[in-house]
Length: 105
Image (cartoon, rainbow, N blue to C red; front, side, top):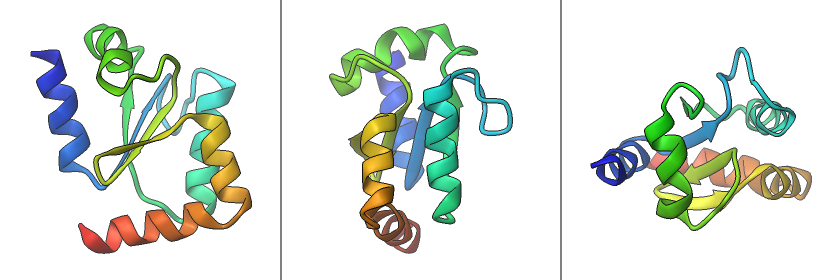
């Protein structure tokens, strides 16, 4: 049931960030830096606070085959966590893929 919920969240928003805390109040440095990267490229995204939803927190790593948080999904696909998001930002790819995702929705 939780796996279906995760799938539904990922498929109903072009950009989804599963994070610890909220964009306004991130609860870990990795989540905070990922939010900053997305915000810096003007991406609007749907955030899910995994600390407020233990079911999602427990099942998301199985859904995505990615063990840590945050997890960024763009157009239904796992992009990765903080390190990958920051690398994409540094090479200019994050702005491109988030803009494309927002146009497509």
